[in-house]
Image (cartoon, rainbow, N blue to C red):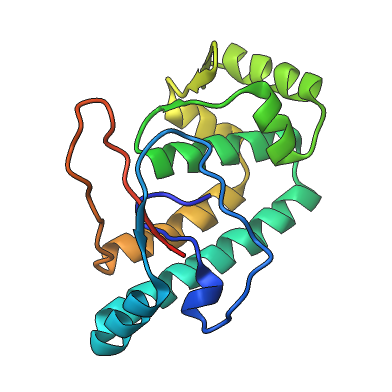
Length: 184
């Protein structure tokens, strides 16, 4: 899960020429693209850029490790709440354009389990289900339903923001304000 503070192509930044990973943009928006050679040249010339790239890689490792632990130890309600909160953080929006089918694939559970769990979270007031999306109408209520994994991941990305990680904006189109940095 990558937002405006992150990038794909971690292997390239680490000097690896190949990667088994693919990037799928599952939410409409914009992405910036830069040739690996240009990015590495800029990182070499400007140590702050290299530090930001490595800081993000560290946060991503924390996220991946914590997500693995979360998947093994926590309930579906906690994992789904964590994912929705992280998605809202990445999108800077309380409405997450995601389907039950997509959530079932992401979390590795049956679609019916997602529907049941979302209904319970809606009953407790944390969210409202919409066609093709979920509105996190009461973030605090949803945070009470998640596990500590959300806070661990969020605090690592918060550290990046406090450390001066630069956001890269794209000239605004009225209906498309999402941003991120992608390198291939």
